Each structure stands twice: as structure tokens, then as C-alpha cells.
Length: 112
Image (tube, rainbow, N blue to C red; front, side, top):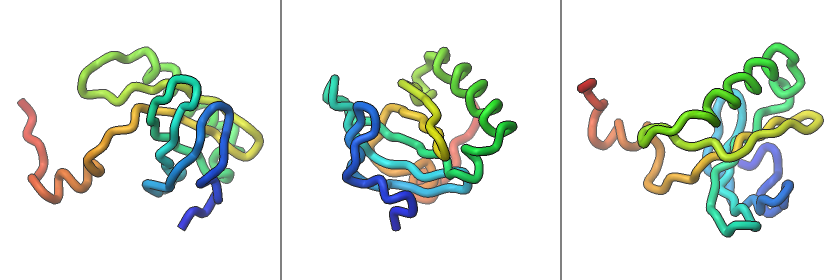
């Protein structure tokens, strides 16, 4: 169930296509970045957290750090922003299910 009702809407230059996940802090949508025809995942932070100054301070700090990371095992962060009652993270969309699906199917990965 799309608790935020964003499926089918356009936010900034992103066409929101489908709800693909929910968590404690927000929901995740598959979307298209229209300007470059790129499929992305957008995590939308729920209003109760997006309106918390402490949460937003941490959110912005962590987003800035993640945006600078470049590693083959880290999903790139393309964009983030805040609006009244919301905060958004735009990341590369990865096909093939969730990490939970992979662990359930193949077992946990072992440290090298």
C-alpha cells in the first residue's frame, strides 16, 4: 500500500513509477530521472522523521558523506533534498530483489 500516495506523480525531474519497499524511516519507489532517462530508486523519509531537526541534521550529514563515496559495493547516491514534511534520497536502482531476498536464497555472505 502506497502510504504517501506518490506513485504516478512527478517530483522535481523524477517520474515516480512504483512503490518497491517500506521501512521504519520511509518508503522506496522505483522512478525515472526524466532528463537523462535513468531508472533510479527514491527513498522518501516519513514526515515524523523529516520534521525532526536532529534526524534531518544526521540525514544531511550522512547523505553528503555517501555522495562522495565511490566503491563497487556501495550504491551511488545521485541527489538528496528536503521539502516541507519530506526528505528524499535518489540512488541507483538495482534490479534483482533486495539484500534480504539474496540472504534468504543464498545465505549470509562471509567476510573475506
